[in-house]
Every structure is written in structure tokens, then in C-alpha cells.
Length: 342
Image (cartoon, rainbow, N blue to C red; front, side, top):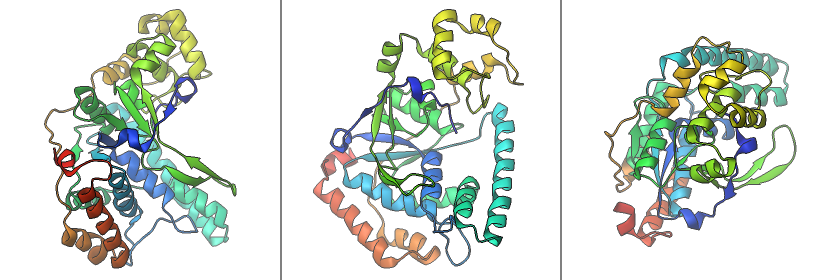
């Protein structure tokens, strides 16, 4: 879900050409959940094979990653590890919400309410261990590197960006900025025309970039103060934040009180976790230097085995996309092969 501070964050549209040839660390769970939410059947249910196994995430991962490669982008997926212990209650709460959404989906299905079915199907999204492992296997077959984070994927991606291992981190959430990513790309994996929920309207979604240094300069605050703003608004670790405080009000508080010690004196903290623990986690998350970013050749037979043999994708469509990927790598698609494998 992440921290919602969009009201005070200035983003600018970025062209595909500006990202061509650059390594971008993509928050894998964030992307996979997007694919599960967007790639669905008319009744709202995700795509499935004949055994009832969900395949929406694999469809999105395969075809949209190839789209990125054709645009010259060098994607590196970063997977979540074990969440911090203090996030456990929020995860339990989300689990209950998903169970309730599943119940309401089944009720809507019995009554033939297609719009309600679609609504609750999207709220009942699950990403299982097997689904994640299949995603990693597919990336291996495609020659696309992925990194296993010890904890939060966004924190690891932000760390890799701050080290210069990648040019930017990519996620829909703003947490990456709190974790210190110098550059955040939004809408990378969901760009294009998208239907507005519950309306017969389509909008064009384009990639945008947010630069941490410019954000801090414009708001005239430090990264530590940006973290405090996030905490006041609400994070995954203190969902909902402080009652009555949105991004703009939080910014006013920070301008006036400046430090965590002063802020604590003027708010009512009603969470089991301490404010300091969340603050310190964003400053010093659990990340690792033990990763390698190495791009390889796509393996046609392995891709076919995973998508066609195991999950019954259309062989013709999979091969057409595979050929596009190979042509993009050979032709350069804005980057040369030497830059791709360098």
C-alpha cells in the first residue's frame, strides 16, 4: 500500500528515450500485484490455466518486460524477503481484508453482479510462494537478473540506486524516497491506456520520474524530515497515520516542529510500534551488498516449458514475443548489445 504523499511530491514526465540503456531496479512484488490487478477476465477473476493456477502475473511479467527491453531499458527485479516483525499486524489485517473480499466476490457471483464481482476480485489479490517462484524461473529463462532482498524490496532497490548499481528504482509507492532512492520511476510497468475504475473512460498513463534531491530542495526539508512526514501521514508500519493529518498538514508540522522529539510532543501516538522504530527503519533498513546484476541470453526452450507446457499459454503468441525480444537485443532497441551485456 505504501505511504501516500503525492500531494506534496512533484513528478515530471519522462520519455522512454531518456531511460534507454539504463538499469532500473523494479519492485517485483509491486509489479506482480499490478499485473494481477490489471490482467483479468471480464468477471474480474485473474487469468488461470486449466488446473486453476493463476497466470496473470506471468503474462504481465513476460510481455511487459519484453516491452521494456524493446524500449532499451535494462530491468532488474527486486523481490521482497522477510518483512520486519512490526509489519506483521498490518499483514494480518490485509489477509482478513482479502478473505472478506473473497466472500463478497462469491456473493456477487451468485447474484450475477458482474461489476461487483470485478470490484471484489481485485481486492482479493494473492501472491503465493509458488507464484513468486514461477516468476523468478521465468526471469531466469528470459536472461533478466533479479535480486532477493533480505527484507523490503523497495528498501533494497533504493539502496542499489544510491550505490549506483542501477540508475533508478521503479515502484508505484513513494516509500522508495523515504528509503533514500535518489531517483524513483512511477508507471514504468503500467504505462499506456487504462480504464478508469467503474467508468467508461480511458486515460493515458505515462512514466514519470521523481528526484529525491529536487523534492527535498523544493520542500526545503531533509530526508529525515521527509520520513517524519511519511510517518505522520501513515506507512505500512503505522497505517492511517495520525488522525486528521494529510501530506500538506504534515509538511506544516515539520516546518514548525522540525524534529522527531518535538513532533512527539504535539501528536497523539496510538500505535504499538514506537515512532522511533519506524523512523530508524527507514533510515537504516535491512539490505544486502550480496547481489549480482548480470544479463544473459533468453532461453527459448525454457520459456516455452514454463509458459506453454506448464501454464498453457498460446505457443504462437509466446514465440512472437520471444522473437521480438531477440530482435530488440540484436538490433539494440536504443542500446547496443555491448551496453546490454556490459
